[in-house]
Image 1 (cartoon, rainbow, N blue to C red):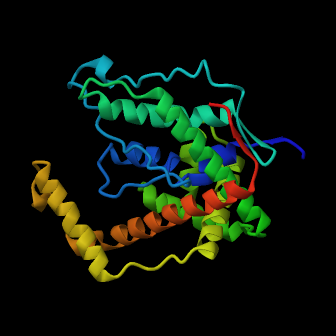
Image 2 (image 1 turned 90 degrees about the vertical axis):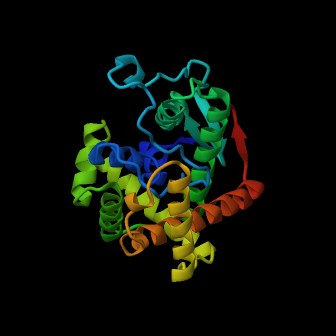
Length: 268
């Protein structure tokens, strides 16, 4: 079987809405907390961004910690002959490591690097399995599909258009061509999951229960329920979150079945 390396597409935007776009949301919204929690395309929960937990005015508390990737092998995993390389791994790992480090600064804890490395490797393997599954199923994105995907990412990220998503990621060193390739992969994976799983539209009752739980959580954390937007204001966002949760659960199940019938080796 021919061995080929995954592209920047497969490491960034197999779930751009789930990882890179989260970073864009924080950067473009000034770090405001989003009541919804996204996760990676392989079903692993992505660490949520926080305010860093450091003391105000302490430059060191604001500095993102650097992850140690010196022990990461050049080939992190092989999925049916496709290599997930160290470069593929490091981009996702460092982003999630920094988010986790920011979360845990307040408690004085350091991220569990070995556990996170395992989680990221599993995430990338699942994404690659889903990408291959979509390819084998003949799912392909048209230019219109790509534009629609980028517009959806823009909406989730607080940006005005798909072009703004491209510009923002170009500033992070990702070329416009790679971003569009990544969006094509995102579309293919999402479409493939929807074809393979029964993704139901959440009812108003389910969304209201989800909203009430969020308000209760806000109050339990010492906040005021009045700080939470109204149910009508949150309804679309809650529906999107509920759908994404179903997609993530389905993605985990589908990737697991593909792994059972595939050839996967993980080296971390």
